[in-house]
Image (cartoon, rainbow, N blue to C red):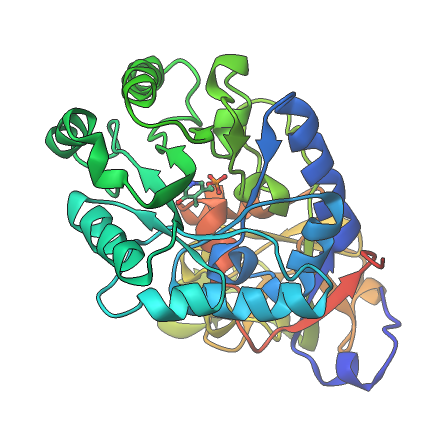
Length: 378
Ligand SMILES: *Cc1c(COP(=O)(O)O)cnc(C)c1O
């Protein structure tokens, strides 16, 4: 792919193409799988690194509601984006709880806290009393993840003392699955049973358990609301099986130089790659400073001129090197682009080469990459 339009592309070391139509299609796929349950969208960490300002309006137009962010700052940014896009009243739930002295900010911007402890509940109830109005909140009960949410003893206490929720309008009663991407894991049904029991005994509110992978565990896991994130952005929610969702990103890196080296010559820091034959090396302007993982040094692959070529040597901050000896000599020149992520070598594949997960790859893609959005218009 030699031609790339526009001066931006001419300056970029790497271009991240983001297919907003694929995100919309993935939302529809998840909403269909969720059947009668409502389908929200996790959009924390800047829409998993893909740009909340562009992604959120697309999801809102597809009917996503509520949105889930991790922090209040993310919620404030999202409220601005959704208001500008014509969705000023979309629900925004803040997963990481209720820090002290943040209540007025939450209320002023229509952000709903997810209450993770009895202390959170008591603080929110006190604020409701103070303002003499009913305040919305979601309630998170821990059923086995041991990360966020009311621990068992606090859940039991809340069941005995439901008046603690007086003045609070529950927008969700939620829990989070630890092992949903392993459908045969015994923890899934254990968490399901604990969630059912707790939700039955707690004051009523829309019940929500499933993340992306949870949506594919079957109807029992759907309840009233599902909360997918990763699958919207093209990460396979059913690892080991064909992906039900479409890839969303394509990462292209610019070839800076091509050189021929002799046998025995080293490539990159530490000379960890040694040419075993006369070798052609292409240097590409994307490195770990762009979120391309150093862990794929001497392990990763790129797609150049339609062929897979190996990463040779250690990934640098601003560049990486490829062994392109096996592709035709005239097929790659400085200024050309190679694919570091594409439909045939997607974010899950790169993550596997790096010994990590697609989530970390996506959220790590750096600000230096030029972002090019496709589709998604009204
Ligand atoms: C991140 C998150 C989700 C979305 O999870 P995915 O695996 O990305 O679908 C849902 N619920 C909670 C509580 C989360 O933290």
